[in-house]
Length: 113
Length: 107
Image 1 (cartoon, each protein chain N blue to C red):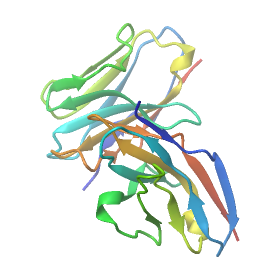
Image 2 (image 1 turned 45 degrees about the vertical axis):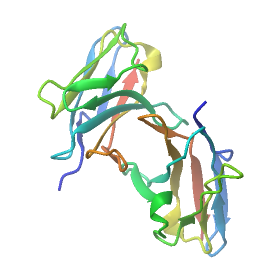
Image 3 (image 1 turned 90 degrees about the horizontal axis):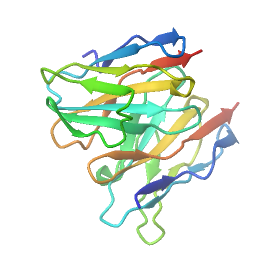
Image 4 (image 1 turned 90 degrees about the vertical axis):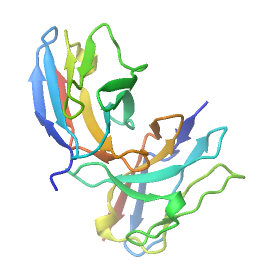
């Protein structure tokens, strides 16, 4: 099994440019998460989906961040426009119904210059 | 408040020495706690969870509700244990992570 797949693995963009990250969860996992991990910190939840519904997006900065999971499978996280402080690792994760075990992707490393 | 505290950023030991990675939590309900590990250039992965009461790769962790702690222990560290370790709490519908402890095991 492939696990949670994320792309791109690495992205370098100039500030004010847009960027998008894609995630394909483990097959059959209803719950999908996007986490933000700043250098030296633990992951922090940005948004959680149950199927196609965003059930917790309280930590998502909605002025510049958006996410979608239109068919309840893969998901996209977008930042527009990017700021220098957005440089971080964006982790996607998924879990089966019940959420006790969460499986992470390898992350998308963003550098904003 | 729901919070996980890992007081040590770095823990360095020699091979064969005992290891204890500290984790304290703040949670008003009945906590569900986990340890995640991230080896160099690999994804974050679950190491163990307290409800399973299992030993994985020689590591154990016991939930102490009185001290609100969930310390990770291993009696004899191996070089391959070198990694980042994150303690996590399943709070109200989300997993809350500590800031992590880097374990370095020297030969």
